[in-house]
Length: 107
Image (tube, rainbow, N blue to C red; front, side, top):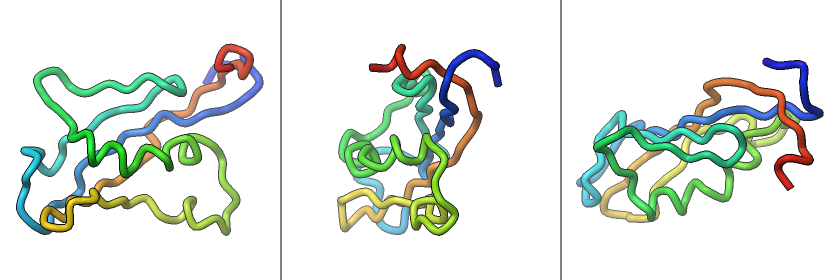
């Protein structure tokens, strides 16, 4: 972690933890994307990530990038579901790094 900047932010990995139904979107356990430097989303070359699964986890990522109060449910929960009820794809959000950034660079 660098000493430059005025805020700490976590880099995240969102990965397919399990599929409890049938895989309609063609993803498999272990498929993932990384969210780094606040807003840089990367997917491994040759892979894809379902836009509907992405849409279901996207609203929570900004909060998961920041420190949360110990009692906050989002600090304790890291699993999210794809909206397709037949697929029941479960994603896990994990912090993979922490960096110091300038908030002025992000607004």
